[in-house]
Image (cartoon, rainbow, N blue to C red; front, top):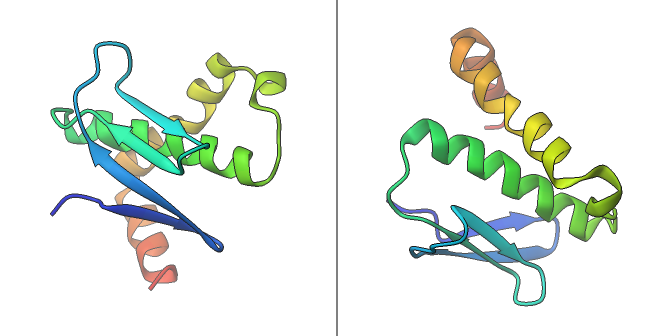
Length: 99
């Protein structure tokens, strides 16, 4: 089952699975859409989702992503996937906490 939307507070971001030559994924704040390439490995998809969720949070919290920088954003937020992949117990605890 593919992700169809992401909810953040009172906002709903529609998710589309389409190929792009330029991006693996892109959040469009003007349209409240997230477009993701459909043929990513599971681990790459996890990293992409953390990265794009960071963009969504920054947009709705009115934080200028340019002050943080795209490279720093990618480096920092994608590390959540690395941590969760290597710490199954932590992932299980977070899963239970979010139920």
